[in-house]
Image 1 (cartoon, helix red, strand yellow):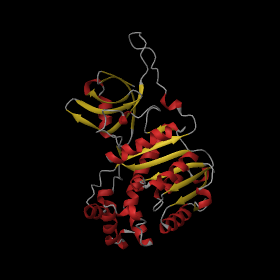
Image 2 (cartoon, rainbow, N blue to C red; image 1 turned 135 degrees about the vertical axis):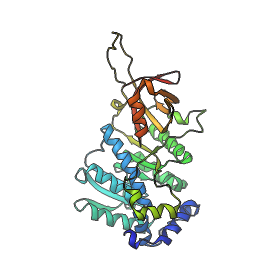
Image 3 (tube, helix red, strand yellow; image 1 turned 180 degrees about the vertical axis):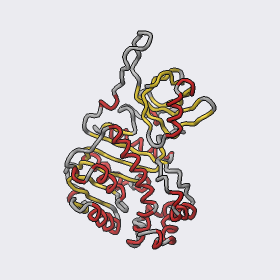
Length: 344
């Protein structure tokens, strides 16, 4: 599929379906062409979100268990599972399994997975596997939360209980992000540890009383050449989408020990001979808001979430870096009374 052969009427129908409640009534793929058109456009945009998440995991030094089975549950066109396998190297993966309530989606995902990874076992997750107690090395979930009915939530809970690691990406809306935070707390209580985007493994500060208007979300960067591509420009105009904006929320969980990610760093002795306190690992939620001479940052750390102020004169390089940033932004700093007082 390419822009020349793209069926714009199919995309119009899919867009209307995504914006309505019709998607909860059953599979919305009518033909393989539906999936081809989706995969080139909406699916690729989801792929850019996964690229941002996977790059963040690489920055943290995280990798899935070696020789893992990857299950892409609710696979759709399979873009998420393929992105994960490709990023972590197919040679390190035992097999890629796909599952969806749509037979067409499984046909598409299985076919394209085999084309992309000729040396990897790619297949469907049959009922025997889905209902077994077999370990799932990597459970991949992408844009599924707003399509779960009671039965699907129960099935997903059972799969999460078998997963060694979970990679989960959702839209960056207030409602979906906070729902994902609820799953974080549920799964953390069941023995999984938060790897990302969280800079800690304690309770989610966004869900604490008084923070109802806040949500954990980030922004991925589309390719720099996007606006020079007439196909993407037409797609953005027809779909009513701001191509520059790719908000997403995500969650990565692991049963293996990950405490080292959250250790405070001791910077040793300061210039005056005094001992500096350790700097806490923090994550910037959303996007920093820049003003003349200072920035406001919505900060998440082990103490909770809070809006902080950073004075440009106190950390000019950091101030500049925050303007360029996209995606999750991990920092180490100390803050007091709503102001960042020491950066590392």
